[in-house]
Length: 266
Image (cartoon, rainbow, N blue to C red; front, side, top):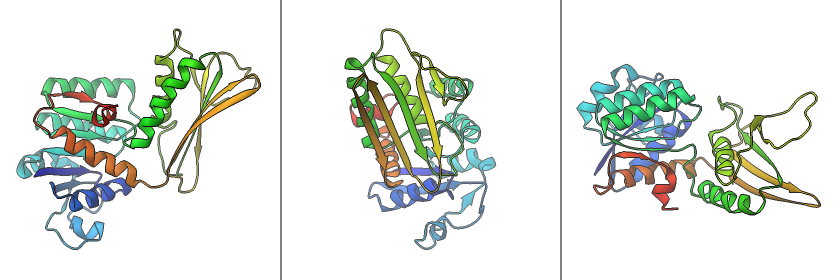
């Protein structure tokens, strides 16, 4: 049985992940961490009745991880909080599944150093959807043939998303550049006098309850190709996180930092 803890236990993704853990035959929910609703029973929060597992304040993360003998900690929160969570999990020798986005380069480096130093296993990805990762593979192939086309990225998310552009949009731009002999500069939106040159432009839309849309436009003379992914439900991300937790718990997986491509064997 895989013993799972969830950071951001009372958030939209956190509660959905907890529901998925509770319905999995090979997993046990042992802890949940959040700044809100501390002391409340997680079962009542997710709507399944009392479980005898109360929300714990993140200040007590280390103590609770050790007490519950957590195997995997899943984090879908915000970057500043996740950096501290990752550091504590590393010190506690707890494996990680991280779907948080918005890390600065310095924070990313800190995360990687902590994970490598502790010799734990971690899956870190901006998007845990199977479809999105196939979408990224399609972008790789398209770029090989359309490298001289103008390339634009449009992403849309709900009005509560804090970071912009999305981690998936940034990953898409990086994926494109990896296929090019010369990297294109990445810009974020346009205003004023902005004649097009060789850049990849990323445009972020925020509104309503949009779960997550990403469109890559390859525009040439007389034609264009669009590759698009739309998430209709957050369940696709939660299911991906559960699969990652299951994959990383396999004994044959060595310590290290992995992406969702490794989980899906893409």
